[in-house]
Image (cartoon, rainbow, N blue to C red; front, side, top):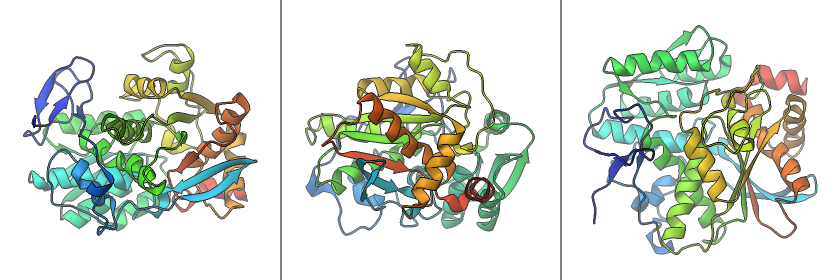
Length: 376
């Protein structure tokens, strides 16, 4: 068996996994970890009530830093007359899907002796890293944009992290974190670290198991940096290569119209960023103007036969209210996925009789101010 490596998908260059401080290529490109052979149903460790039930699909053996993440429910329902299954990821320990990636990333860094890490986040990622660092006994320094939801900042501080508010927007926060990483800090940036995606790919494995070891026709999600898109592409891609499914699900992706660089590039037929105007959005978790893995996200959507849609602010608010009326208290960031179901169904991309999974990435409890403005 070939030993797993970090891989730069753009240049083809590889790097050994033995350098725990490695999180990007020498030319600044993001890295991935080579695909695993995939799983058979018998390989799922059903005695574990966490995503570590899929540990046979992870690239290297690790002692789990776990808080019981994964195993979120799949709830059959409908959205504006379209049959769907909701995947509410707020059942993860810190209230968002980020715990999937963080569990793997912090397990990897702990394995290599990290005692302190730095992370940049608009909220959910920072809270997640703070929690798992607390579980691992690692000191966490979390950098957040100055206008981050107070509930998310409070949560990270509650776990014992040192939270530093950085003047400016999400990109300014990322730039400061990268500066500190270049100075030698262990970087736990969820948008960059290759092992984060290894955890998010369990979303695909879990949906596969939820559906009786079958793939859905469509997965609808939101994207800022695009980690749910890439995690699903990675997991379902491994299952397809292993012959466990016979096709990839179509990846149908929403961005807020006020900040939609992936949508703009996709519509332009580009593989790179195109100029795009941005404005503030209530979907703060997807307000990323320069996604570091934009070419990879676009390729994953295209290879699945998927599509992107830009959701206006009023429609995001309507989706928040509509989900709440179903008992699903989704933050504005994740509610965009429900709004996207309507848009894609109108285009004929979601058809009668298909199995469609809608990933709801985070809880409305994480965004009290925004929720108050929407719900009143």
